[in-house]
Amino acid sequence: MIKILDGKTIAQKINAKIKAQVAIITNRKPKLAVIIVGEDLASQTYVRNKIKACQECDIDGQVFSLAATITEKEVINKIEQLNNDNSIDGILVQLPLPKHLNSLAVINSIVINKDVDGLTNINAGRLLQGDKQAMLPCTVKGILALLNYYQIPIVSQNITIINDSNIVGKPLGLLLTNMGATVSVVHKLTKNLAFYTKEADIICSATGVYNIINNKQVKPGVIIIDVAINYQGKEKKVVGDIDFATMKNTAAAITPVPGGVGPMTIAMLLENLMACYQLNIKKNIKK
Ligand code: GUN
Image (cartoon, rainbow, N blue to C red; front, side, top):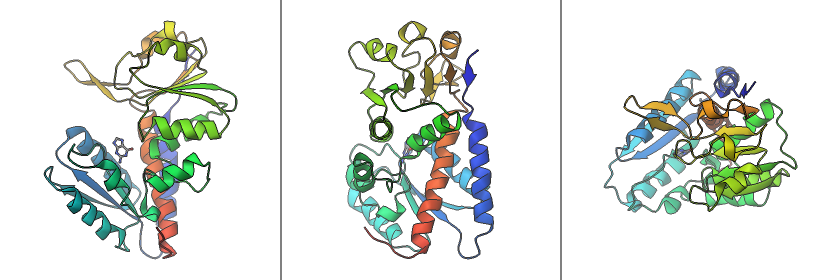
């Protein structure tokens, strides 16, 4: 029987722990600032969910909605202002940004102690070097927490990641490599994708392509971490990259969509925010 890796329940436990930590804070409470540029509906939903999670833990969350036409300099000025605001512990710039903005320049303007998403060049460099101080991107940290919770081995495992983004594929590949896995970072245009998925003990997929692989393209007993959120058919049913029905007699375990990696990502955002809060409360802000 396939095992369901229940991110929702684990995330609820983590969030409850964070809420208890916040409840005993006697000075100022942690605060997250979220910048969203433009009107992307999916981004708006993600941001709403992040702020809701903050509120449920009595963490302050403030959204800065900036016009799609804003210049790069103006966005960076806003970030500088938040960098210097002692009431703010974490700054998250929701991605993707409109095409005329240089995402790297924007992200890298976040001061290191407020890089709650772990996406700045400094945290990415720390991860590359295997530095434990690295703030991990929330999705990556959420996947690790899920694997750890279910005691899924990582050392010596063949892990195929179908995503090569700065948010998921590349940092997850580095993390798992640092932990002793043998990692293939591939993507939806990889030639002969099945060559990599058939060898994998664990597959992490975030392509946005429903049914990107089926049960003929994996080995029996594989563990599937489905990171994608896709909307299917007229009813816009929420699905991942993997059709659960085709895998249920082949895979050993799978994350459901919804209720798998998604809630873990948000719980890890709160964990990262608490870590930033600890740094900022010491008033030792360094870049
Ligand atoms: N867009 C989709 N996922 C993410 C994420 O984890 N962080 C940010 N900043 N933007 C995203």
